[in-house]
Length: 245
Image (cartoon, rainbow, N blue to C red; front, side):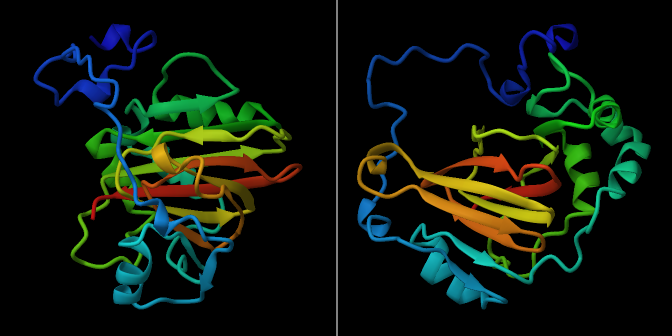
């Protein structure tokens, strides 16, 4: 099975009882219907320096309303030097990340190979999800669970690395998140983000355009699809954490 990874990334199926999904003829079987009353009138993103956990939960997360916390990443890296420490750990280096998107290679590669290859390029983008348990655990040593998340929420289930340099494009990159709650933390540089209302709200609620600067955190729920665009002529890095509520 490992040999077919470069051709088919089957790891998201590893906990399934069957590798072939049961055929379902219902056209709405996979649809989630959101309450569009919650998002149709959103015209700006609230910004807090710090936020109380209960306000975050009741006013924003439970109502699927995105927000930004501007001073929440004091314990996270401020530059890319932590990458060298990441790839020194064999459990991370030899892990295969999921949902890789990049312009510097084709097919599936070990995380360490990907991050080493970055050094060969002056213009690049990449993002991927750490889905191997050991790789996620090691990554969490550098990107701690934010203090503002209510303790009743589950531990961080997945983490992502978003890294680019001098990558000039007008196209937005889709990030395929899977859990209910996402935390997008900008380590350094700037990222342009679009939150796009999903499913039945796509024609009712507005697309939210956001500029996220270093040290800021965007918190949002699965009502929204995430797309991003790198800030041109600069180096930018962000981390995404996913959890359940």
